[in-house]
Image (cartoon, rainbow, N blue to C red; front, top):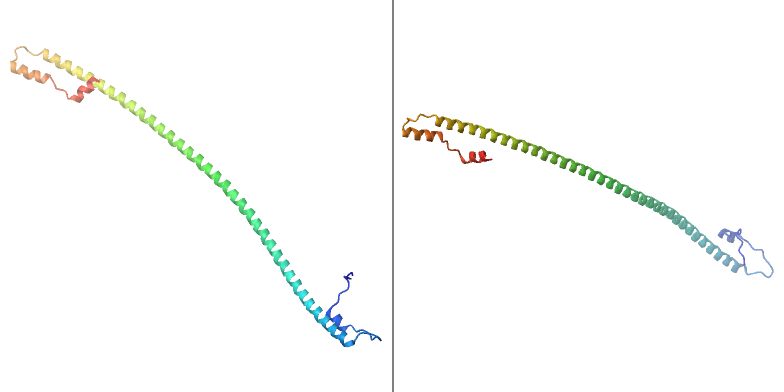
Length: 186
């Protein structure tokens, strides 16, 4: 049995429909009672159908809202992943920059320390040359003084008293401190 889709029966259609009397027809009271029950059932089914359509509409709205939220969450997730990737790349670039700056600063400090060592070595060399020159001058001056003392002691008159000679010898022989002997030997 096929159902005609263009035929729509409402509860009012059932209630308002009158059937003509026929000679051997159905009992009118039974038909009226049946029509009333059909009317009530159709009315109940119509309300149920309307409720279901309302719920379906609400579910479709909720589904649409959920899909929009899902789409927004997916977009937020993608944006967060992109942001994380960008932050990671930026952090890596900053780390590389900090490393390069630290290496450059370390190289600069090492070069500065090497320059300072070279400067100090040059100063030490200059001081060593000055010390040697000073010792050479001191040696020359002491040699001259010793030569003068030797010359002076040889020119002393032979008639001098032995006590005076001992005094002269003590005066001509100047004891040198040990540090001066060390300097003179170098």
